[in-house]
Image (cartoon, rainbow, N blue to C red; front, side):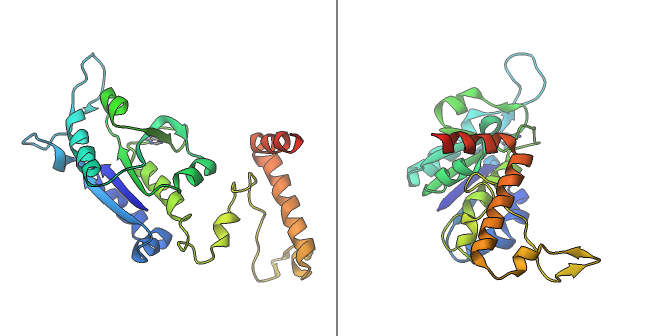
Length: 232
Ligand code: ADE
């Protein structure tokens, strides 16, 4: 998979992409991540990428030209499956959406700033808008890092134990069951007896029931969806 990220703050990705699973996936050649500084695509002598909005209103607006220059250059080099704009009013990022996007070969992510981006970018260049939650961030960078991380961990070979992505919370519409490690008892806080039984069938059933109960309690909307599906 190849991911091209267009941003005015490329340094913001240094942390998320230089540690842990994403770092390892890049090292193994499983994902190719390219950061593009939008200012490099500005024709302005001060490398400006924003301007005042046409109507009255607070905040600057990201200009069409630098974004178009960058996206057009990338598109002239290869086919892109999606050109994604990270935006609080986009489609909410969920595990099913991550799963679907992980099937793609080449993705562009555009990180917005200021008051927004010129609407013509959305009309003519963007194919998908994604939000990572109903709150407003200072820019799309953190959102693009979240989306990238969620995609990279699904690439076969990115996780040391491939089955662990399948057992993630949300992959089966359930949140994960609790997990424990040694010691068996700490300050009188005990590990559930069933996990020490060695009986896989009993343990798996316990985990499933824990997941169900947790989903019902913590994410009732997810639980109702499951119930509705099982009645079909
Ligand atoms: N940019 C600003 N806020 C955002 C959000 N919640 N999701 C995606 N991109 C954003």
